[in-house]
Figure 1 (cartoon, one colour):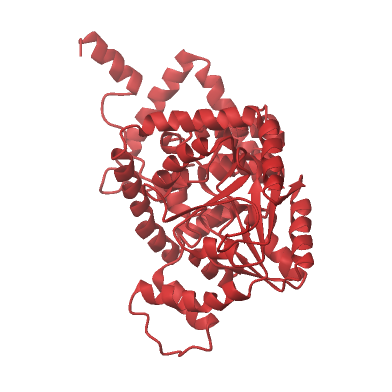
Figure 2: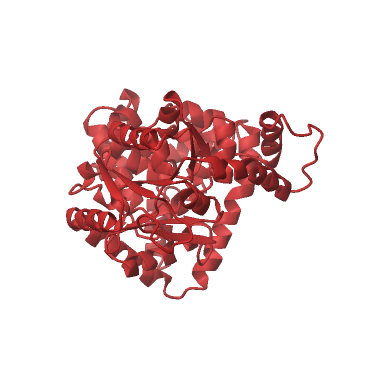
Length: 481
């Protein structure tokens, strides 16, 4: 099971394109990620070599995942912790609830964790009388709004400053309604004030894990806020939620991947906080939990091992693919309708819940290839989306009109003479139509028969003189150019 928000991608996308507030937020936030990553990468000459190292580390780990999982579990137990093996989301939720009940928990603080979103931990705890409190600033605001994250590292990517102010006024009714938010820092200060007592009162803290280290039995979290450390060190009980592919063999492997993660995600050399946790508090430790639990979650991932989709399990959740994706940049994360948006979600979600439920996702791509070119562990995302499109087509899940049109195109493509003749006819027809009233001033079509959806949101330039590309190419070769 994977949490679903609204799986109707086409309807969601159409709504997102006309949402002025969302478009404003996307326009402001996206460029910063791209610029910072480019600067960080340019300052590290060995970045491309490091990508190859990261890819190889993850490939090796996945090839021997059973061994490293067993080694990790043994080392967690050696450090006084406990591992809970969970095949499904139901198993994981039950394990978390049981730990919380044994601890007598009334409130639970949480660090940002996409796997907790995937399995729906918050709703499950609330249904059983336990209050989960998101402590990451972005997660805190979307919890107030009763929304899901729209981005895997910036949960509130879709919001503008005025949204934050309005929601804080709505939720924090005990504060002066006329207070002034002069700058962003005022929002942060108010959130910090509200959360401080929550940290101190929490019975259990839940975090995710960016990496699990088999060699030491450690979990690693990477944050730019101190909330993650407070969540796992102040409560008596610390629960780590992690999916099985977060495993790496050694500390050295982990540091290699850490050099890739922050640069790819936020353009930092390293995040502000990179925290390694190993077991329970030892004698002489100044802080740390009395109980340390790792809830290891499969939830469909082992079914990907040995298939053409195994490469997706290399993902280190940096979000570089969605930051550079033109589709994500146009419609945002909520349009995808599932927990994981963007190119990585378009591959991972069908793998976890089936392409029959998520067939629109691998089609939500221009195949420009930017996602693969920036992926720190070289996941061939366009190739994997293409595999899902093939599966969808083979199972007759695509709409009939699309299948018919693809069949018609394939018939011409297999007959070069007919294809060239049809192309010449099409170019001639477009040239004639270009003289009509449906042209824009910029030389693009305002409307075309059977292409209204395309021209509504994109430019379709009128053909240039000289015929088809093949005709112009042949002419250029004959003239020696």
